[in-house]
Image 1 (cartoon, rainbow over the protein chains, first blue to last red):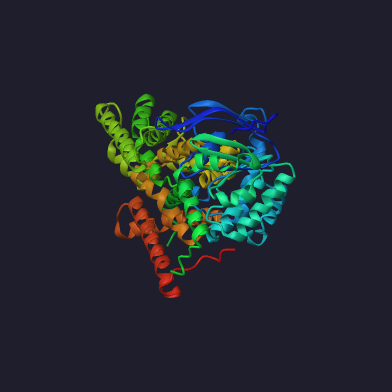
Image 2 (cartoon, each protein chain N blue to C red):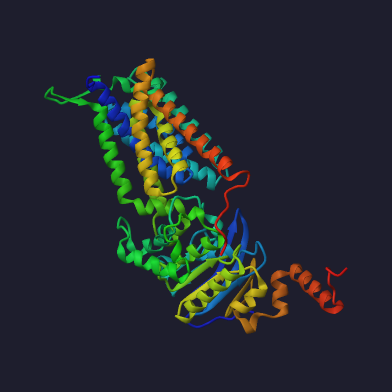
Length: 262
Length: 298
């Protein structure tokens, strides 16, 4: 089930992406409303990160097009922000937390100009939003996984964009941080921003997102949570894996099965 | 000891060269491209030979341009082999620079009777001849050692390059994809850095040779990185190490009457090994057998 919207913030038409001749995304065709917290769900290797990277123009596409704010990507770069996977960079890089967050302001600064007081203020505000203000001068090599993730989110906030694309911001993050980040994302959407998040945990996704995209090489579903979260669509997305999961839950429910007792 | 003008000139020039190389080397190291620097320093050989052949002297601008073009070509070839032909990075570096270097050697041999250039000169250089290689103006007035002027010009350009593009270099070295997303021309910045490395290699090869330039690109930044985790201190420490290496290398060479450039790199290597040993041993006695922990996850 694919639900389209009028005047979408993001419109993808017939997008196909392939690595080495073999397609990893087939004919994805969707449109997304603005001001929503949107989750991209799917099993491993379903092309979730690929979809985000294709939207951001980081990988070549073999067909179709992407329109953001009804414009080409290059015209609206300053309105889009990106949180890459935490593992995509080397955290041994000699930089402080403040240095990394300031990088978010570089896009608006332009070539050759140096960040000044104004940029530093933006960065400090963003660090405060993610609760990292006491780590300003800490070297990034001395951060824990959850702290690294929050630094990346603060860097994206510092871009002051309207559309945020986040690649697995909850991966390897403990429950308290996850709740805090999710709270922040909710505040952002309440303020009119649109946030698209790649997520792999179905259970928490049911609580978090307003709009859900289900992906497994093809687009399975895209629509408001209440419309698309059906067993049939989940089964189509996760295939045998979901089958196994539901079976186990069924057995536990039926037989009051407790592995610790036996 | 009285003031020895020749010694001063040699140390001064060597310091300039090692600072230029170190400044670029910091960013090469952070981009995990130190060996690309190695590849470039060898791959510029055909460019040098062709430039030499066209201009008829090794002082010509053509030599620098030829080397610059070959340096960029080597970078593009490495990228192409890695991304399009799916060859591993180390293998594509190995293929590219040996091929281009071989072309350079063939060209030198083919043109040997026309140009005053040999592999020895390009590979090893000789900074000790610096005080007698003077820049003489058309009016016959001696302006001082030619290579010192080249080194000053090189350092000015390298410093200006890094000063102007500091934030871009920092961002693209840390997270190139993010740079692309916010609209920085990451590819162009990378090529600009590679061109600066090519130019620095050419500007320095007469003094320290194409092989030892690699050491100056790699060793001081790698040593400094053992001691600091801050980019500005990393750059300062690299420059300081460059000057120290030039100074200690000169006097060590003077003492045993050997190659100055060779001794500079040997000094650099010893400092690196010493630093690595100190840094490697310390956790053992300071923290027992456990590895130093990360701050608690919040």
